[in-house]
Length: 370
Image (cartoon, rainbow, N blue to C red; front, side, top):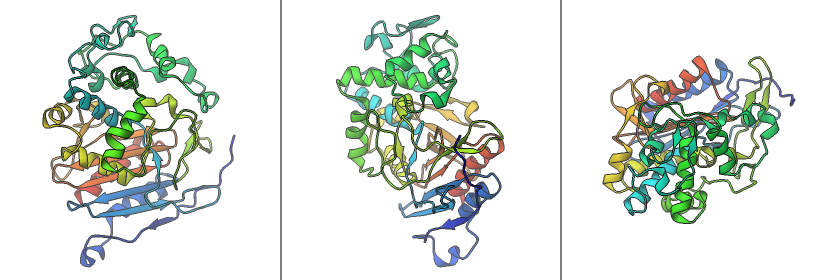
């Protein structure tokens, strides 16, 4: 087990591009939120990128980027974006809907005949919409026994079918359309549909249709066997037990996340993605409307609703913000954009639980409502 030094609790910030000098003289609530995540909740590092309605961005950091060396947190550093990947996968799917290559209410068997079969599982009765909306009833592949000993599979390459087999060995959680329940398996299957329809790897489709199209320079879908982050990044940590030491989990094979969670990105790139999405730069109006048509998803927080790979979260200052958020071992990202063009992304370098998790969510609210 890797030994790590005790967190120092150091905090730091970068120069501001906005707001005005007068308002900048006041205590910065975003920086205070990040400082509290480090000093009170013992997060190794916290990063934020906040953009105003004109796109002017300020970057923040707190903590240390490497517990062993005490290195600074890189400004707007790369992190594993986890389930933000689902929003990208949903956009590609909806682009294919607009191109009439996929029908939202067609069953999965239209594209992958016979693939989804199991106890209570039948791809003839699960639609593409239900996959993207998490109303399919498909069980969670991450609950497969192979993931019970995670260190043993940290660097293992998984084919998507390997992961799917772990889900199909379980029974359906409910009949398709009966309720909402988050399951990574839904986006595993969506990725397989994309590949079948396009004849190309899902990562290449995400790169071509989204990342290259809107110029996300620090975002990428890892290639098979890739385990490191390309650009400056804070290290990500997890505890193997509640009271155990923080273990460096920065390097790992994210094939286990694939179309549900493999992306690497930065807070500012995620802000640009969600802003471009809501501005209609990635989807025609009809498909964007479908993406923003939501069902209750209270398991993700009070008042949260889930569309097609996109969530709406109430703000304390009124209205909602649109995003998704993600968790991968060592990293959690939260944030999104408002209807009037404000954007905020926050990342921390361990996956918080309980009150600490709520404080990360509150930090996003602070950044968008200040």
